[in-house]
Length: 217
Image (cartoon, rainbow, N blue to C red; front, side, top):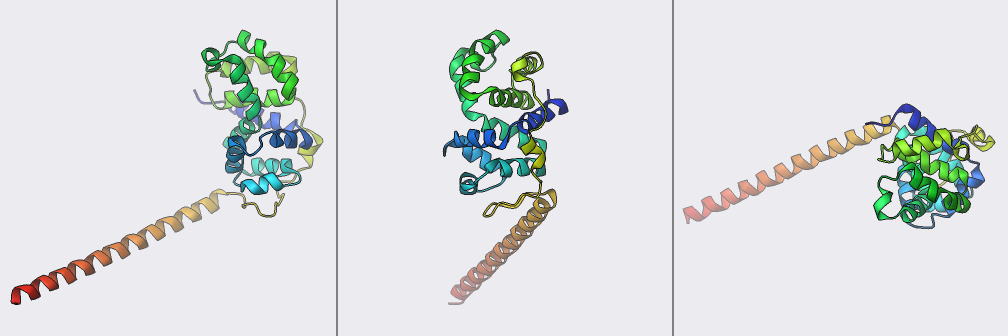
């Protein structure tokens, strides 16, 4: 079953309720590992630019707004990556793939104590939007547990323009730009294919000429 638009919208709302300071702190916790690499990739920026940015939340918000819903979902899960990792560890191999509500209620208190309610909320919102097996349980927790009720967007979210420019980062990847790149790739591929055919034809002609000369001898 595909995730609903409501599930996707909830991910965006879970990010929007966080302040820049909260997002920046979460990104700082990623260190230089796989979660940061994946976050930079989905945001279409270079990892050094994301690491060195004085306020990476500005970049995150702008790139999420300029991309599709899938970008927000993956970004949310990567920002909340350490929280997810701790949750999986606490659940253990037997429960991690498809935990019950009771399983989650057992492991959530230490997660909230370590990461805070907003980051745990971000984690809980991301998995249903990815159509994970735990989607129903996480949806229920978000709907019924007051700790994970998503509030209004923070002042920081409202103040971040989509036109935010980051020195040294890649430009936002629009559909039109992607189409142009694809057309250039296809044209280059055709040129290379034609050149290869020409080289093969020349080589075959030279081989035939050499063979004919040998016969005459």
